[in-house]
Structures are given as structure tokens and as C-alpha cells.
Image (tube, rainbow, N blue to C red; front, side, top):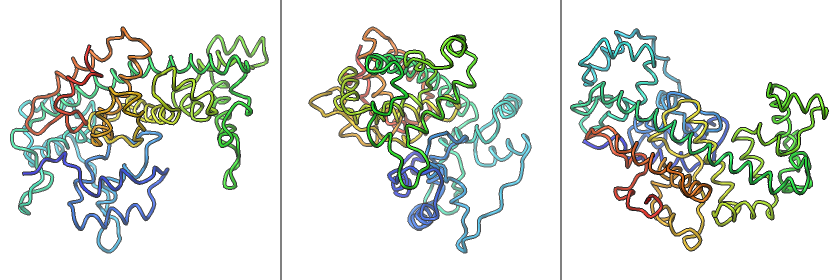
Length: 388
């Protein structure tokens, strides 16, 4: 039997396509064409129980694309099933459910579709056509699925903890750099890259104008005392050091992306990532990962839709392993490693990396599971970056 976590050619091709807001007919044709060479269930491997803002819809094609019949007609949606039906289906496919009442309670609390996203990691594929592609590995149990889901929950919380350190430090660095140029630097188009403040032929507003629209909407809805104070005393105008406190990671990432090279270079040097494009790439990647975690989506074995650029090996030798391990770079381990590099620079005494290692020691012990699915190499604990 082959491992369900092995990447298919179709999956790899989809991951390399540019991110779009919607899946186009060309995307679906690509999936259908590749299905002649690989089983379509393997494409579903990267679909998620929940969609994530900012993530490419191509990676969410999943069951919709696999339901396209040879004549081009989509299948009918699957009918609603009760909890009893769901347990019966899991058992029929080979998943052991020794504690039925507990399993029933979990399905009611979490939902079958969400649980099935974790159960998918325990499925096996076989060259034997008589074996259903939905069959589970021998020995897989509902308890294993719950352990994996609980591990993923703890992983999301730990990722959010690390993101908080990065986000707060990035706000402070941005304020320190731009505040000395203009107290309302976030509103001054002269302080940003030309592409960020230029309206394209196909757009109604520049990226900076769109950013300000979103920011002003946050200000309008905000009930924060400091925002109310500025409404009363300053007509609603906020200096950048106050404005930064309202920025969610997506808006912060977009503002960093819009910086002029001179300012982005200062931040890149401060955070020791080498080049401004690397910093912007990481912020974009962090935003996607943070959204997944904040929206409670499955995290541990998902593909990174925003593949990070890397500093040169000479400027950051502790990240050299990502240059030679493309799988690690495109999975969670790559994201966590970039986070570790930044947090080590921001707060050298922070023990976040120790918490990561402690959590990973609790990864469910099951033959059909491997941390390699999350990009972790076997010797990851010995890498200089992850040492104490």
C-alpha cells in the first residue's frame, strides 16, 4: 500500500499555479487532465474542512473537481447524513470506533465534515481496484483521529502565540521607521512605493487607496478608548503609532509590502532576513498561516500557498536547509522555521521554539502518520536553528 501523504503530480502542479480569487475553467481542466494519470482522491488530500480568507481557491477545488464526469456534468451533492449514518460509514470504511457514545458526542460537537478532514490522513490507497480509495489503514481508530485533531488545535494556538510576537514587533518597527517621516505616514502616498499608490488601468483605486478604505472601516467600527479619544479631540485623525494598534496582520502585511525600498531595507536588516523582498514574502506567508489558525482550519499537513522567498545561505546559514528541501519549504515546517528565525532576532530569550518541540513530542503515534507530511525532516531537532 502507498502512503496517502505522498504528493501527486497534479497536486504539485496546482500548488505552483498563481493564486486566484476563484478557480477558473483552466484550473478544472488541469485537474481533469492529470486525473488520467493519478487517482483523483489524492488531489482531495489538500482540501480543507473550512475555506481560509486569502487562500487560493485552486487549492480548495477538492471534491468539486473530482466530481466532474467525463461529459462535463458535475455530480449531485451528497445527501445529508445523521450521526448514526456517519459512524456506520466510518466503520464500513475500516475505521475502528470502540467508544461509540464518545464518538457520537464528538461528531455532534465538531461536525462530521471537519472530523473527516483529519480522518483523511489515515486513509490508504491501493493499486488493487477491489480496494476502495476511501478505506482506512489497518489499525486506524477514531481515537487516533481525535488525537490528531487535538494536536492540531494545540499547534494552532502555539502558532498564534508566535505570530503575536512577530506582529507586535513589526508594528513597532514600522512606526519607528515611518513615524519620524510623517505622523500620519500611513496616509501619505509619497512615502510608499510607486506601484502601491498607482491605479492600474483595470482598477478603480490604487492599492494604497484600497488599504485606506479598509483601515477607515476599522476605525469607524472601533470601540477602542484611544480611537474614541482621537475622534473627540482630533477629528478622528490617528497618528501612525495609534493607527498601528488597529492593524490586523493582513493590513500590516500589505502596508509593509507597499513600503519604498529604502524603508523596507531598514526593516529587513533589523529583522535579519537579508532582503526586503524576503521580508515581504514572509509577511504574506505569515498572514495566510495566521488566518488558517484563527479560523480554526486544519493546519498540520497543509501546503503553504505562499511559498517563502529565502535569504541567501551566506546571510542566513541557519536557514540553508530550506534551500535544499523544497518539501519542507512548502509545508508548515517552513513557516515555523521562518517564524523561529524572526522570533530569535526579536526576543532571543523567548522559549517559543522549546514549546514547539515539546508539542511535537506529543504527535500521535500511528504507522500511517508522519511529521514529514508537515515538512519536518527526520533530523529537524538537530538543526542549528532549532537548538536551544
